View 1 (cartoon, rainbow, N blue to C red):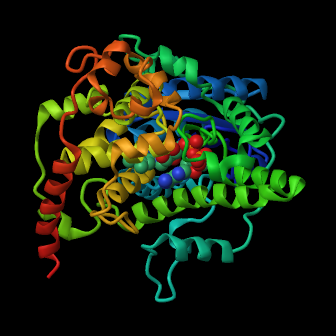
View 2 (view 1 turned 180 degrees about the horizontal axis):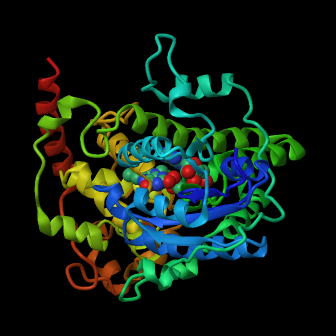
Length: 483
Ligand SMILES: Cc1cc2nc3c(=O)[nH]c(=O)nc-3n(C[C@H](O)[C@H](O)[C@H](O)COP(=O)(O)OP(=O)(O)OC[C@H]3O[C@@H](n4cnc5c(N)ncnc54)[C@H](O)[C@@H]3O)c2cc1C
């Protein structure tokens, strides 16, 4: 290693704690030049959506402040990535570029090219694992194949033992003698032109400190009740760490260790709760494992027989779903929560996805695209797994013929109706017994609650029982492909 600075290329690892690439750069004992390069076209066809860009803006702002407190800076550049890096290398005299790995197919292809080109230039180019407990290629079946079923994957992960302890954040970063120029954050144009983000601002604090606060909130009490509350959209029963994990504002081993330590300190029921939460973290690992080994799955079903599925293209129904105006209260509550806050509870995600795919027969890929644009935690691995799981065409998926009844799901998982009342206020005065299926309420009860179907709240788009029969008939076509 010569004495030239090391460029630390930040991507979805927007933190300073438990950051292996940053640690390796610090260990080299030379100045560190942190840079973020905005090159969305290199991630096509899955360039970050509108809600992700909003999050990224604020996360970069938080990271820049945190680096400044440590005597450093965040240099912002625009793509193309390779030419930006080459220019920065020239400007700073850097001899090395370090970064954390990502697993999306377009990003892997881009990173491979960047690595090869930098090496050909005589530059040291090193990538590190910062965002997964298990790299996708390190967990394999006995035959050496990727896993496609969750439980054996989970067991294989556990058999690998506990993850290594997280690395502490450095107190300060060695600065170069002269800083290269940087764009202003506003130059990246990440924020929407028309400000629709008020609900997002109220709901979230992007950045490492925001992630830490959310983790503490979750560990203080909700973790204990997680197995019971994780399915309740009316309760604050989950960690809400998904956008923070996606943008790498906290590492999976940090949250894994923090939950384990809390559970060990408390004993009793906390151990079971911790295991249940860790399972979800391992679902995230599984999703990345699948995306890495089956890189076509964001756009095509993992199970090829599903290519024959006779989808409908009902544009009006799709619009009603997006706007939360399907006439099914739990579906509408979920879709409005998504629109207002950029996030939706997992139970609601499963129900709205199932409704789109199985009641409206609209392709899961259309739903995945809408989620991609509107979720602050839009993550190619997790989103693909979630949609393929719901549509029955993915790894370890729910069988297609198990069709959620969105009305009984509402009564079961939002039993007091608090979730629906919050997001569908026009139904707020309806008594709980009728809240989840207002079209079945006697007219006088609706009238007393000021609910007029077709006026104040939509009639259901479809009859669930008929839609279910149609979906099963459509599925027969898929089944026939298998023989
Ligand atoms: C149709 C559909 C689409 C989805 N799209 C996304 C997405 O784009 N991004 C995303 O992060 N999650 C997605 N999920 C998974 C899940 O809904 C969210 O991760 C979860 O709701 C986030 O809330 P939380 O952080 O409070 O979760 P917690 O219950 O606290 O779980 C902790 C963490 O585990 C991970 N996790 C939890 N459930 C899952 C799961 N089923 N699959 C993979 N990882 C999981 C997340 O990183 C989460 O932050 C999707 C699920 C469905 C059904």
